[in-house]
Length: 251
Image (cartoon, rainbow, N blue to C red):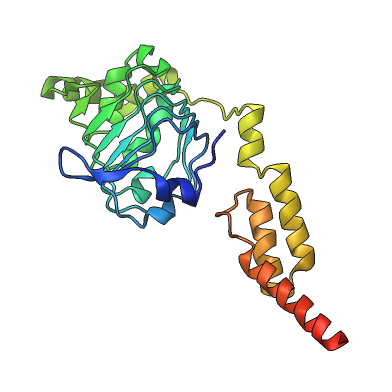
């Protein structure tokens, strides 16, 4: 399990791809959880997270520039409800070979008003009745679904199926959402820090010399996510300074 740290993002390959978009490659890093994407400073058009172990498409900061998100071959089973708000320019979303199981799992994509190219091949939900029609109805901005252009006749059929009173009844019958089930490994990571990290933070809280440091460290401990390796630099500096002053006074 590899954490998506500030260092990993900074050290990863960054380049202009074949369509002249600025791309960040985070492929095949065994990343289980999205975090720290704010350090990209919204400098990329494309982020490639193919071949990782991500289960939830969440914890994404506001990235106005990002237009392409590649998530092939992960284990995504949930999408954050406000994804369209944090990725307002998202045009291409590739979710091939993930674990979206129910039609309702794609409902958050309705907030992506500029989404045109969507790939869901290899997800269990693609075998559900009315799969294609429901996606077309729910995410009307999409023009190409699973590499197949959406025709006007398909849109009209999708609207006939899912709009109005009859459409509501059909939605109630066929549209469900997956339960929020996490395995033990991810639960530990999401709630939390590794035990070693937690102990370090607790020690730093005991050594903190200012109320601001205590509050900041307690917030980190409660959130379960360490921003980067130098989270305690200021605290350690204060402790060293205090110890030096005490030694000087004792002399």
